[in-house]
Image 1 (cartoon, rainbow, N blue to C red):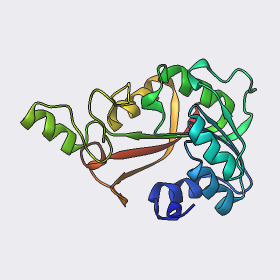
Image 2 (cartoon, rainbow, N blue to C red):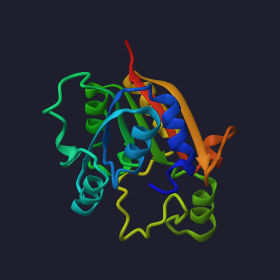
Image 3 (cartoon, one colour):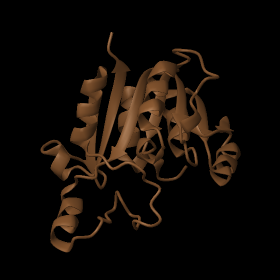
Image 4 (cartoon, one colour):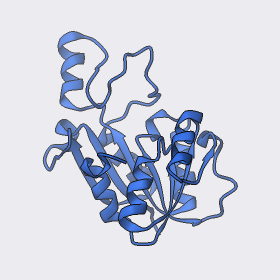
Length: 199
């Protein structure tokens, strides 16, 4: 897919994912990330998506994608069925994020999570100065049509992982298409985390 290689997080994911690994992408959308990982790392890829239109796009790309609501769980998959499970910009949209992440960590040996940062400084400024729900590049929706059900910051997610005994092996933060290295919870629009269950 055109332009995929220009997304900095996709390049980071390719660094995190090992060659020839098995990958399950939960909420894979149009399959852009899976196509990129197949091309760059020769992964064995599978996706789960709810949108029929997105699934048709994936099938046209030659991807193996199943229609399913991940809020119902992944009971058909055994523990450690995949080397990696990906939840990229999906976790904040599900009804039961705690359950979905627990299932992802059960099914995958490692899990990659990407989230928008609701504490990004432009979002904070809009709330403080305008008294309005933030609309930013990472959060482009109005309050009445947003797919986001849970509003968390990068710090919230780190605290969550610590409280649940989840190991953050690696992390990466960006604004626009550039890496953010300092004050990530303030300056980062998005955070990406490589997770594993604590042994």
